[in-house]
Image (cartoon, rainbow, N blue to C red):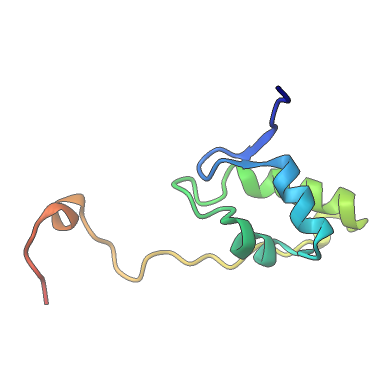
Amino acid sequence: MMKRSIVCRCEDISEEEVIAAIEEGYTDLEELRKRLRLGMGPCQGRTCIPLVMRILAKKTGKRVEDIPLPTSRPPVIPITLGALASDEDEE
């Protein structure tokens, strides 16, 4: 059994999956994020985005500093876990 190098633990995305997507033509972080769900887990990319930036730089010949960060999209309004767990509709 081959070992997988996990890049994004939140979404269980491997280095091999990132490289395959880059080879398919996804060559910026925003595209990779949409294709693979990078940075969409609980850590919001704090762990995986720097790793993917290094992989992307190596595979595309770009400098890490020249790779723009993906757009941050926090929730529109904060919501408590209690509100999520309740059955009541709030208006």
